[in-house]
Length: 113
Length: 411
Ligand code: SF4
Image 1 (cartoon, helix red, strand yellow):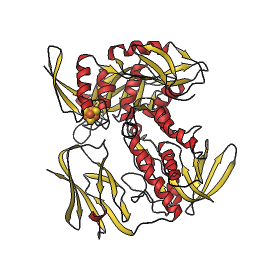
Image 2 (cartoon, each protein chain N blue to C red):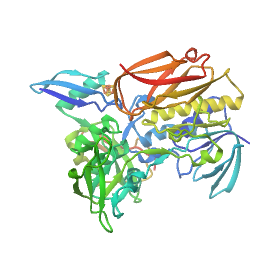
Image 3 (cartoon, rainbow over the protein chains, first blue to last red):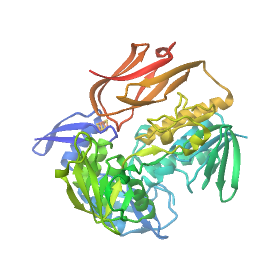
Image 4 (spheres, rainbow over the protein chains, first blue to last red):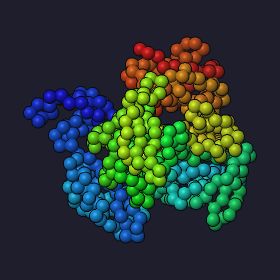
């Protein structure tokens, strides 16, 4: 089976052509760097995404946050629910961990507030 | 008298300040209109910034913080909440803030780094009513990411620039339904990766060669009519389609914010809407520089930082009285290449030229001509308006020339 993908790892956005047999990636074409090949392999087997969003703060404002590593793509909306049901305390600094170990990542602040 | 005044404390202003500091200038002042440094990056909470600069993917606020940390460590002075009212041709800046009232500063050199704003044009020529619920994509981004307030639940986006694509994902993550992204052109102005991860990931349709032809609703937006357009970008009546929605986001492009530059007498380029500059990013006024989105709209902040460093270093050299031999070369383009930055070369040194093309072209050569003779060429498999290109020119290429012409040739 062939699958066409756009690599999302960097702004160049190479068009990738992936050959898949029995749920295994056999070959990747079109990538200009090794990260593209790795992306194609995970994307076809178990796609992952970094999530960026905001979380409520105890003073009513919102702080931008992100997952410190990509999480399984199908967990994105579940994670959004968890974050939207949480409130964090201020002050907070870039890199502070707000929620530990959800879907294999930490939720960290991306702004000083 | 202040050595260097920088107007704008976003990514361009901060990079320029740091570069000038590293070149030995200490008497620097950054004037920033907002209540914090960082500019528009503060509301760009998605990741994808800094891959070129830092080799890692940062969010907008994180990228800005890397620079703000340096500005603070270097003790470079900045004034927040400060609105510049006027710059005159003698480099006297009039500004105002709550603490100082109205004040004037005379500068040896000025760097313009005011950034850009969103075009609003797209909204004006659509038929129908003008209900609440129509926002520019950037305004909606500020609502959601800074104020924590969702502008609506059922969304149509007009324009497929990166902010529109990013907002399609952002609104979807927060529970809204984005029904379609309409793009007037037959191609998207956004990055391919954003079409993939912001639209395709969520099954949001990208309707190329489509536009919004009518707006419906009295108080609040109730729906829009969209239609396909022909080669001349005229809507085709039979393709009209009604989409119920409460929110319409406009992402129809950015334009450099140059009101201040004009009052200073800075000559502007009609294509970029930014200043005409030389390789140092110096404008037609000696000692006045421009960089970042006020000069031309960039797709990557990494390039903004790079350009601002050129301006910062050059301003420092100007303040210190350092100079290379003078030359005078104008760079012309063939239309397929829409513009170049810089537009002219005034000093005899190796340079980089950045440019944008007018359409999507495949298998082309970027060629540079001097007196009708091809002196440089570079093959490109694909070029697109949404992606800035660049080439390096060594000084022997333009030696003795008064004009260089940039052409895009089919292979
Ligand atoms: S393959 Fe490499 S160069 Fe191409 S988009 Fe992916 S990361 Fe970027």
